[in-house]
Length: 173
Image (tube, rainbow, N blue to C red; front, side, top):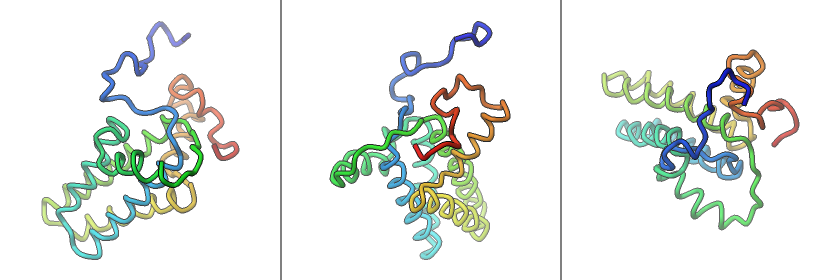
């Protein structure tokens, strides 16, 4: 692929369990984000400290396998989205995976803060996570995807990582 002799990792070279979908159905992504909002808000409102484990697991599972090992991802992709009858809206997978990675950072931080007794700080992390997920679910504004686009434009993320992402600033995909 003209990248200095290195071969990009493709789904055929990665164990299928650890592949991430590309493209991603934007409808499902937004519904998963809505689920994250609900879980974070309930965790904060009812002091459900144990729920930080569930939230963090969900993000780690989704960044590693897409919806495959995520209970929320499975519920959305297998049950909710098909019943809505809304046509699929395919969008590039790498920015969505990057966004899930940011979710891992926030949710695991919340989990660790909870584990060491800093629940208020964990609530702040969950609140920030809920805010980003609300923007994604309600407005289709994926902050992680926008950040991915900036990283591509500045050359931090090579174009080969996401050929479909080159015009992330263009019309809504």
